[in-house]
Image 1 (tube, rainbow, N blue to C red):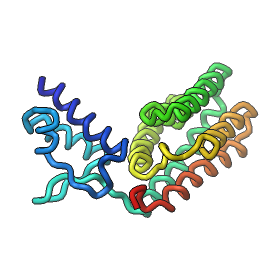
Image 2 (cartoon, helix red, strand yellow; image 1 turned 30 degrees about the vertical axis):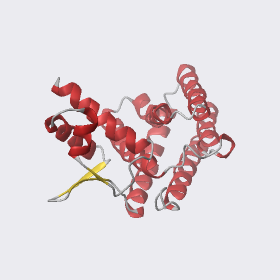
Image 3 (cartoon, rainbow, N blue to C red; image 1 turned 90 degrees about the vertical axis):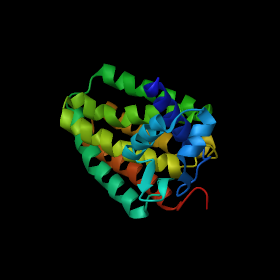
Length: 217
């Protein structure tokens, strides 16, 4: 029961952040969750700790938990490191990629478009994660995969806090054609094109996020 309540509290807060009902820098209290879900504070504290570990909350001594509000430098540091690591993963994967791998990436592109059309942010984030971690998976390098996943976890946090997913029309979405170019580079087995596509995509995302100090401003 405690574990189930922890999951309920975790999902309650995370979903509130994803739906922009909680703002970056806003305080999140155990009392609020306790009243909303009619549960004790023990599982709520565990849920807060999990959200803190994932980068969604930050704990301030004697003040409580707050929705994380990342600086531009933090976001830039993560995305620049992603460029280096994901370019390496992709070029390593390029030597191993099969027609089945290409088909899988094509399916992810279609699912991603559907998620945008349906404005399903949770599905989009999961599909986006699968797309960006797949090259590292292809290499079977568990250390590389862990690094890619960890950086992508931070990126997800930044997207949830700053991205304008719900208000951006489908025709203005940049990631769809940018992901298309990455897959086309895999199809062409062109390493230079692949590296350029990954760098252009990640730097484009960084530029968009850096120009939004907060979606609430």
